[in-house]
Every structure is written in structure tokens, then in C-alpha cells.
Length: 260
Image (tube, rainbow, N blue to C red):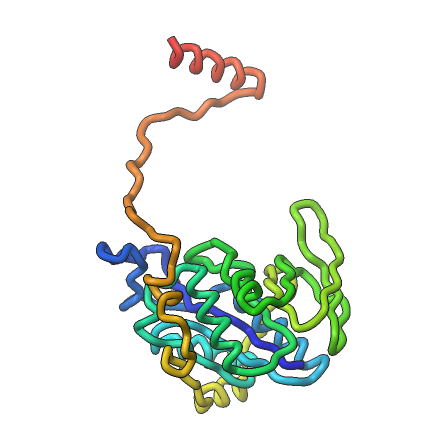
């Protein structure tokens, strides 16, 4: 089974700076980690490889230092890593990002399965995975919590819902986004760490991918952030105490006073 995992390197802290000109995150000088949900995607891909054989390829889009995320994935059991890196990709929104990653996947050739984390911790949109499947015109199953069965032509999956789950069978190739309930990511072995250290990371630029320049980076991003500001902190307020009935009465009186 030829599996591709799309991961993202995100800031380890919530204290990030915003570029005032582009309204995008300034990642320089901020320690980064693999997006936590993507760790589950890597682990599931490696488990499927261990069950059915094949290869796990990890792809990320980002600056040159994002190769450390690819090496970490290789230390967990992935076979190879590709870094989609070019200044032309800077400022991409979810649409432009999914278009670019889909172009990279096409460049890699045939595949059976693409796995992504359900969402990124710095954006929380959950749009890139489904966007990739749309650009590649393949089925998608989101919020996958368990792979029940798999063959070379189809997969049977449990998809998490707010209350319970549903069983979905999809033909392959397909794209999955996974939730943390699906597994527990492994700790890399010493052998894995050594292999990752010497692994070759292949860089893919705009020139190699030959993408439409009007659909990448800021130019290809229909979502534009026009203003960013810090909300004014709330002041005042009070905590109501007592039994539920007493609190309800107090709240009613407060609302009456506010209205009057």
C-alpha cells in the first residue's frame, strides 16, 4: 500500500507575531513542532504499512526548517520525505495550500491512500485535507477513528460523530483525516532516529511542480485577512453563588436592572 501523509509544522507556542503588511503568521524565531493531529496520521500510516506492506511518504509545505518535521516522521517509520518549499507559496490560505499539496502529490505519482490530521492547531479550519481530495478528485472520509478493514481496492472505516460513529466503506485511492482516538503515536527508536538523521529530504519548488502562479501563495488565496486586532479585555462581572434556584433568581434581577 502506497500511503502519503500530509503534515504541517506549527508554532509550539500561542505567542506568535503577525506580519502587519500581509496579516500572516511570522514563524521566524519561533520553535515549531509537528501539528499534534498529524502525529496520529503518521502513526496510522506506519501501522497500515506494517499490516499490509508498502511505503509511507510524508509531505509538508513550509520554509526550509520544516525538514525537521519530515525527519521526525521518518524516525517514526515513514520511508521518505518531501518538502514543498518556495517563496512563491508564502501566504497561502487553505485553498492555495491544498492546491499546492495536491500538485506535489501528483508529481510523486500513483498512491493508494492519503492521510491527514483532522485540522491544524494554528488554523483550526479542517479544510486542507478535504481541499486536497477535491483537487485530486478522489473520495474523502473525515474524522476517522478506526480502520476496520482494508484491501488493495477499498477500506472500511469508523467515522466519529458528535454522538457515536458511522461505518463508511470507500474505494481507493481516497483521503482520510484522522482524530486522536485512532491510535497512540509511538516514540521513535534509536534506530529510527539514526535513519532520520541521514535521510535525504527532497525539495519541491514551484519550478518542479509547474503550478498555475495565479493559484498559489497570496495571489491564489481567495481568503484574505484584512484586519487583525487584540480584543479589549473584559472587566468587571461577578460570580453568582448558591443553589441553582437562588442563582436563577439573582440572574433575573440582574437582567431586570440592566434592562431598566
